[in-house]
Picture 1 (cartoon, one colour):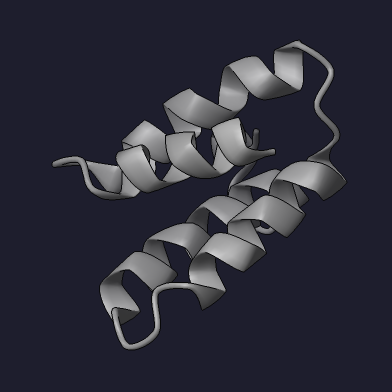
Picture 2 (picture 1 turned 135 degrees about the vertical axis):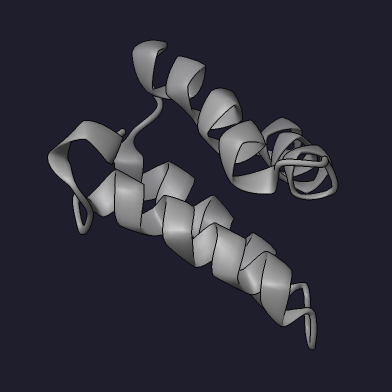
Length: 76
């Protein structure tokens, strides 16, 4: 799980955080990580950013992609 948290942090600090998060999460899903575990890691990561509302919004957007609360072509 620490590796996942590191990947999420690196993605969030990139130039295009939403795209980077999607690119980090997609292979995890393909390799058997459960959506619940990824959502839990995203939520913990979101909570760790305190007042950085932009990063929190990026995480929430990607969480929407995981839960299906988005256009069908954006789902993970």
